[in-house]
Image (cartoon, rainbow over all chains, first blue to last red; front, side):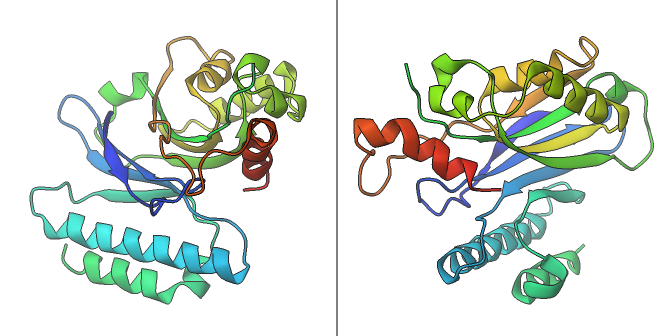
Amino acid sequence: MRYVGEIPLSLGQYGLRDGLVVYGKFLPDGFDFTLVVVHLKAYSDPRSTSIREEELSLLGQWVQTYLDDPANDRDLILAGDFNEHLLTNKKPFLSWIQRASSTL
Amino acid sequence: MSKVFLPLICAVFFVAGWGTSQTPSVQIGTFNLEFFTDLNPATGQWCEEHNPRTPKVIEEMAKFIDSLDLEVLALEEVEDAEALDLLLSFMPAGKYAYIVSPKPRRRPANGWPSSTKRKRWPCAMWGRYP
């Protein structure tokens, strides 16, 4: 595995965390993938929710941009602590993901 | 000497497994380790004073994680590389390696907290962020 970079999910705010992007491959010619690890803003107060929605929107855009580039690996895995019930609460994020996935 | 606690995001991976599997899959686990420190007061005294974990607890955590037979672990809220070294010290030697996100370098918008607050605020803040 190797370090690829970060996604600026901290939004430039101290205390929030950027996403970590790493690339992994089973050697010598096996399955490879890109893994994104995130830890999004916690809590459900209006400010925290707003920040988290902004982080999710940014992450969704990053995913779409990533998958739009044919040079990038198709196997993209998102993992981490989203502090959110993505299937029920964050349809905008899911739409980003679904739209990006449809390009595969 | 106190130090600001800025938890990191990490990817820990099973070293030996990479050369053997040809299947198009990977088993990944993700854990928020909730304020996982290196047990060293020199790198965060306040944090360690409020850290409920003992080496024995960490050893049990490590054995549990190792028993899951995962190829990759995505971990959140880890203090530093030394904390990861501590966790891995309770796992089979050489079995895992890791990548740690860089330490945040930004200053808070209003500047760093005062020296008094600096000992308490970052740890308290992060400690409440599950």
